[in-house]
Image 1: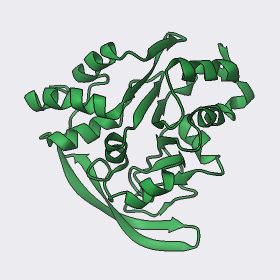
Image 2 (image 1 turned 60 degrees about the horizontal axis):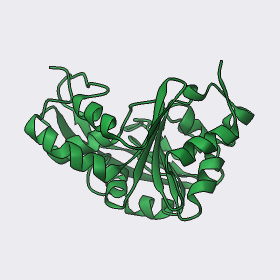
Image 3 (image 1 turned 30 degrees about the vertical axis):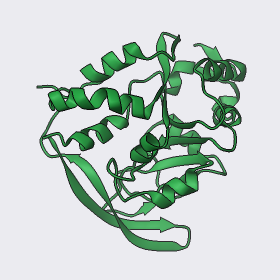
Image 4 (image 1 turned 180 degrees about the horizontal axis):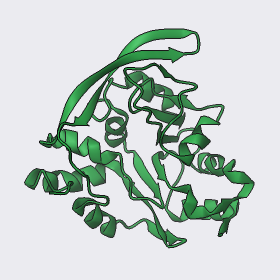
Length: 242
């Protein structure tokens, strides 16, 4: 199996144009790197050193816990190895969302949590805040993109609807009731990955490299939304199998 050194990881991040002050949402299939040096324990520190104290790193930590209790510190994310790396960091913060939470590290983490609007993909959701504030997407070996659902909610696709999920939040000694407005499927559909919009957008992406036969890319959240909105408006079923 391929082995990837810390030096190579840094080279990839820099080749993708990541720099100081970047606000980055990470979607990653870490298997692209095979065996990581130091079992991957240095992966996020390398990125954090590049973006500096004013930058932010974010990754989904979805649990879909509601109506059951969501414990910010102990409820395990369902989003894979990158989430586990975030969870180990002493400076990590987590959105108190019992459905589609996020791990955050860095400059804007506390502010983004404070401004979170009890929404998975709507106004003041984490994807919304990133898009409005110059955020970027970093994809490593995957085409997964949580901005797709943000896009769907902005356009109001016919196969989804906002459903309010309620439950209990546990945060250390604090216990309180909360809710999330989740943009859920109302009819059984199968989404396309990658969908026709993403496929064209990825082809146009300038900051992309291939590692271990898999794509690594960085792009602006706003650039993706601006590209995709008129295309989804023209065909609101284009993202799913017909």
